[in-house]
Each structure stands twice: as C-alpha cells, then as structure tokens.
Length: 163
Image (cartoon, rainbow, N blue to C red; front, top):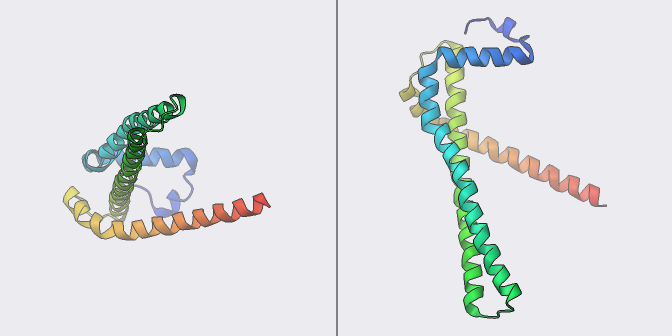
C-alpha cells in the first residue's frame, strides 16, 4: 500500500503491528463491517459456549452424583444421565461447526480484503461477501489437511514417547 514490497520485507516485529494498525485505521469502514458480520458473532458463539457448556456439565455431574451417592439403580436416573450426555455432545458438535464456519469465513474475508488493499484493487463489502463463499471452501480444505497433519504428528509423537 504505502510502502514498496522491498521495504515491507524488513519491518520487524513491531513494524508488523504498526502496519496492521495503519491498514485497519485507514480502512475503518470495511473492517468494521467485517468485524460486525463475522467476528462479533464468533465472539458471541465463543462466550455462549462457556455458559451453556457449564450448565450441561453441571447437569451431568448432578445426575452422576445422584446415582453414585444415593446408590440408585433406577432407569429414570440412567435415562436422565444419558439424555444429558447426548445433549452435551450435540451441543459440542453444533458449537464446533459454527466456530469452524465463522472462523473460516472471517479469515477468508480478512485475507481477501488485505490482499485487495495491498494489490491496489478497490474493495467494497459487497465484493468481499461475493468472494468469501468461493474462497472459504479452499480455506476449509487447507484447514482440514493441516488438522490431519497435526493429528498424525501427535499420534506419531505419542507412540514414540510411550515406547
């Protein structure tokens, strides 16, 4: 944007933050729109997860305590416990799905916006919204391959360390 590519190669740690803030504050409107559309819902999803997960974990713990301390062998208590576990895992799956979706969408929007700004192209929020569905599939594929790579690395490291 302001500096040629040769100068940007040697900005250093604090220079990266300085350039980031300059970019964000010089394009406040587009970054505010992206924040309100993608990042704010992601934050609410993350915060709601803590509250809902705490409530579900409390219900599970309470049901387990009733079975353990009261020596209850009732179908009703076991049904309550299994229902609580099913609800917990359905919630976790839903939470992780929305977290992944909004994380990928916000990442795609920010990356496209920054790339367009640095290449000198005009960027509008409507353009970003048109491009994001096209780009996020490739980003999701990259994420899944990265996840698979880290998973395999941890499995191999675990096997090596356990021997």
